[in-house]
Image (tube, rainbow, N blue to C red; front, side):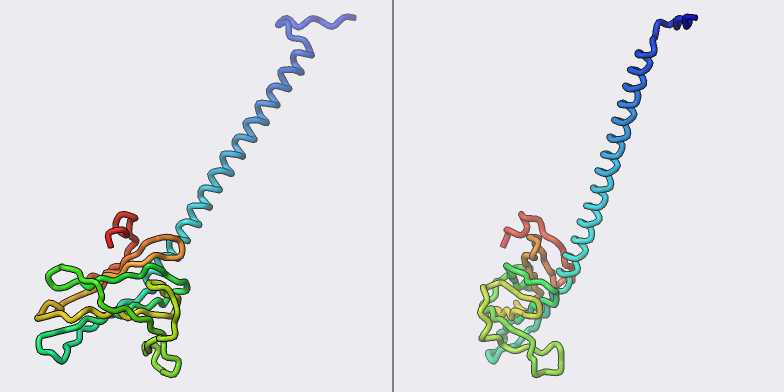
Amino acid sequence: MLAAADPSGITAVDWTAIGTIALALATFAAVMTTIIATSQDRKKFEQQILRSDLRELTAEAWAVQVMLSDYVTRTPHVRQLVALVTNYGTRTIARVRLRFVLADGSMVQPGEVRSISRDPESRSPGMFSSDNDAIRPTGVLPAGAGLRFTSDELAGEVGSDASVRVRWLDHAGHNWQHDHGSGIVRELSQAEAAEW
């Protein structure tokens, strides 16, 4: 006996071809779904790494301590400002530069910059001594070291109520500023970093 013909005109071979195409489409859809999911997971992971890196960089930036002193010189009505910048972070920073911000808002560059290091003989963690033996490029501040910035002599009350701004470049190429007057540490844009 002969099998009855399919009234739609689709043969067994046609059904096999349709099944193969359907399987190929399902496989393609599964592969694309996997690629998209993997890509999204990778982006989320990369964002987590970036956030983690930024937190680390911010913590390192906050580990740069700035202290300001105002000294009255032997000459009446003449002052000198001294700022100590200490890197308590774990990585070297570079291009360390400082401006004294005077009461009238003007900024002056330091007259002298000297390397300092922790005094190993002292029991006090904040004691420093001049580091005349330190041979390091200007503006480079390794972890645990410091720089002492001294202004030229300032006449009158110009030096009173002064503050400092310190800028530096971290190991990842980010520029930072510590504004001693406001106590704010923030990342600078490239344009801001190029100002001085």
